Image 1: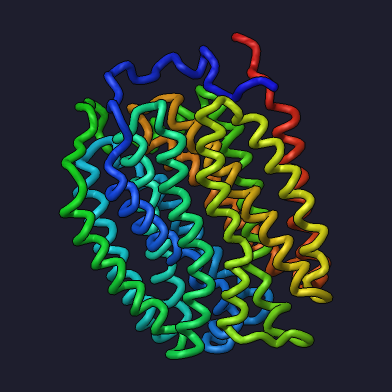
Image 2: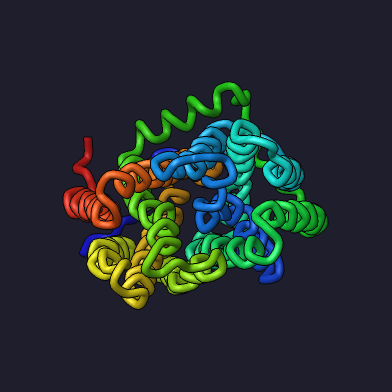
Amino acid sequence: MPSDRPTAGDRTAVNTAPAPPAPPPARLTLLFALACGSAVANVYFAQPLLVTLGRQFSLGPGLLGAIVTVTQLGYAAGLLLLVPLGDLVDRRRLITLQLGLLAAALLAVALAPGTTALLTALAAVGALAVVTQTMVAAAAQLTAPAFRGRVVGGVTSGVVTGILLARTVAGAIADLAGWRAVYLLSALVTATLAMLLRRALPAQRPPATAMPYRRLPASTLRLFARHRLLRVRGTLALLVFAAFSTLWSSVAQPLSSPPWSLTHTAIGAFGLAGAAGAAAAGAAGRWNDRGLAQRTTGTALVLLTVSWLPLALTRQSLWALAAGAVLLDFAVQAVHVTNQSLIYAVHPDAGSRIIGGYMVFYSAGSALGALGSSLAYAKAGWTGVSALGAAFSCAALLLWATTRRPAPPA
């Protein structure tokens, strides 16, 4: 099976500066993982709360996906406008500033008096939660290529854990103290992490560049136009996260309705069924370091497609939902970590722009899945949602099968 290392054409502008000799200290990697998990969790807190938010703000079933979609659109804007700053300014200052602003946006969500204020604040939360990608790029820059897969995998394990715990924590806190308490507590945690990272991070000014900020977004587009690997891996991200969002943006509706009628806590707890995703993140990083990126991707996409067979039985069996969630989360995170490890190697000097551009595909897929699943559920129930998720998964598998061999030299 061919390796998915960047081809000769993809390495034309790779940084030749000496790489760091070893991974960053374990305590810094752990802090990165905690902060990334906390930041990305804010994007997913609303998922087990959708029915409650819909009732409070008078949103019908077909519009519940707008709560997730507006957050993802904010995330996409942040990826294009904020993440590229990591290639231009000191990442320590950028990370701590974004975390501080994220804490303020979370407070605004908690205090939102109406629908417009809620959606505006959620868009700001999405835009500022991209600090996660700035931290991933910082961890990659601090790490030698030989260790990069495992370090990125370790940090991404924190991201996966944050995504999973977001649903569980949000559901439990909402049952105890109401949905607003979820965002108040997160604002406090985010502000605390900003202070800890300011003390722990080394000054990390990127290499000097003559490129002004206004040219960074256009530079990101040129990188993706130039390198086939970035386009392929970005499109894979769009499709697998569309499948991921199709499940998690709509599953609260059948679980909160008869015959299950579960509480917020019980709905959120199903996120833990996908805990295998955290294991996938670390394992996929190690497999990538061994040159098994293509094999990892193909296997994961087969599992993703198969996962929709048990997921389609959610109304009949909660065990089927749990089994399908394990398969789906494992597959999505394995592809995600493999993608990030590969794309960073294309041009390390532009690491923030590349990861930011890649995550635009991720965010677009998440928004597409959220909106599509809400419409599918309103028109065809859980059967329509399952068909949509399976379609996204099959499309990703087909794309991988037709692009897995390197493109011939131009």
